[in-house]
Amino acid sequence: MLVSFQHGRVMYLRKVYPGRRGRKSKQVYWELVESYRTAKGSRQRVVAYLGKLSRKEVSGWQKLSGHLNGHPPSPPGLFDVCNTDAQSDADDVQLVDVKSVAVQRLRRFGEVFLAWTLWRMLGLDDLLAREMPVGREQVPWATVAAILCISRFCRPSSELHIEKHFYPQSALEDLLGVEPPLVHTDRLYAGMDELLKQKKAIEQHLRQRLGELFQLSYDLLLYDLTSTYFEGRCAANPKATRGYSRDSRPDCPQVVIALIVTTDGYPLGYEVFSGNTADSTTVQQIVKKVEDEHGKLNRIWVMDRGNVSEANLAFIRERGGRYIVGTPKAMLRQVQGQITDEGWQQVREGIEVKVVKTTTAGAKDANKANEEQATETLVLCRSQDRVVKETAMLGRFVDRLEAGLKKLSASAEKGRLKDLETANRRLGRLLEKNWRAGNCFQVNIAAIAQPSTKAKLLVSWTKDQQLKHALCGCYLLRTNLPQPDPVTLWRQYIQLVDAEWAFRISKDELELRPIWHQHDDRVQGHILVCFIAYAMWKTLGGWMTASGLGDAPRPLVEELSTIKSADVMLPTRQSDGSDGTTLVVRCVTRPDEHQEVLLGRLGIELPNHLKRFRMEESQAATAVAM
Image (tube, rainbow, N blue to C red; front, side):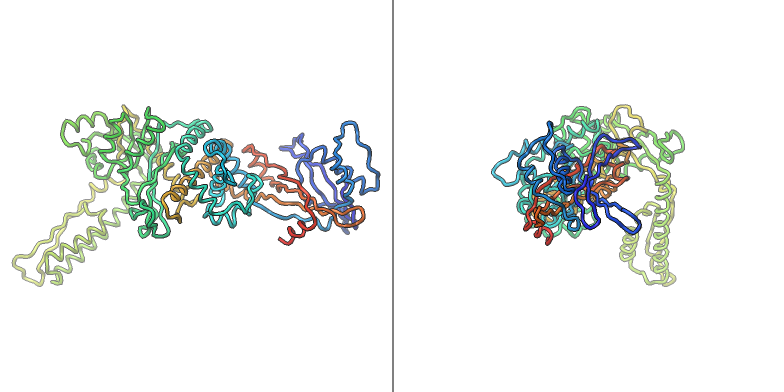
């Protein structure tokens, strides 16, 4: 289909039948191709990919090619759609200036379209449109929420970065219909405040929708905490305080985030606490939150030892709940006599478990201890990898402590260390630095009654590493499940790694930290946006797993980020040779072979073009200048 012919160059439309594995597709696509002559013969190159064309558009191109070849326009056929305006426009066009064809306005499309697909797949567009009805605002709040969450998913950064860089350089304008000047920080901040009001509805909706998509079970829940720090003093935020920092930033104020996920790491809900909140004090509030919103039947809580206290376990038991928890090291010493070579069950290579018996820690009287012990099971776990690691660590601390004791003894023998109180302070500092080996030594410092030499003090010690070595690589689990299988119990507990991985994704991939906002509501909104983006991230991971693409979304997102949208500028001329309007086709670049395989596995079909329009000469000149 001929478009123009100038100086030995021909530009025409060519049909393309994309297919897979040698099968020809029924769909017809179109390419804008330029044919030109070289010393080695005729060559062709693809100028633009135009995608699908309607019958009316194909007819228009045919009429245009007839003009270029000097043929009079043919009368309309029986089944041709007559359009006076379109016919007059086609009659006015004489040719397309091949030398002036240009591709402009490259925008991010691949990863943005993927995030927009995930947003709709989770039903968040319908939910927020229903919960945040359109009022007098210029841009609907549901649309602003989509911009915030999609931006966090694709290129996490500040709201100012969204306004200045991400949104103008992305195809969200075409997908959402919001012009870049309308996306500014004030509107984004206000949208974040409005989104925070829907936190409870969003959590309940995601629980239902994720359960439908991936057939999730909410009987076993993983609970863990992390912290995220602020840049700035945060004087206006009462929750921003200093505390135990999991980010190694004790110099910065922080908040503590409690996250509830399923055994596969899919989020169920979260809460934000003050930065100095102890882990164990958050459990009861979280248990009440989940029971109030999702019910309490058949609920099993899996928690690390940092969240465990006797009060928390009693609280769960009183409400008819079940738990699988880690225990402090002190409780492990109560069962060290049962660490023998008998009764172990192998979970997998290098991991062994067995049921042990002991008095429940924290019981105030014998009757209560017997009652709790009857309803609980203790499972002793031993990892060969941890045995090697902890034995080596213990050996280093033992050597350092023994070397320090020898220096202390030498100072006493030479008379440089004479005061008993000073000697005990030095011993205390030595034990503090090498606390892992403290239980392996019995140290005695005594004054010499009748010194015969310069020595006034005698430093002596005995060393016994056997008891300490027996505990290396071992840890204890505690549960009130009736007659649990120790192998199954260990596998359920080790799924806490999914909760830790959720924090890692939120902090590293979605840049939850640091927080630059200062007010409590704005901080809560920021964390909610990150929570929704994490739900989108896990949805993509589950989608990839079901499609046989693994479970690592980052490489896929980076691969699709090379797909762009662009404007193909087709300058035209009138019949008298004067410049006419410029035809603009806003289309999407074709994915390469590898990207087509990924998109095919996921079942995603990219749009061929986003819009077509005409641009006047003045507008075209402005576009070229930009």
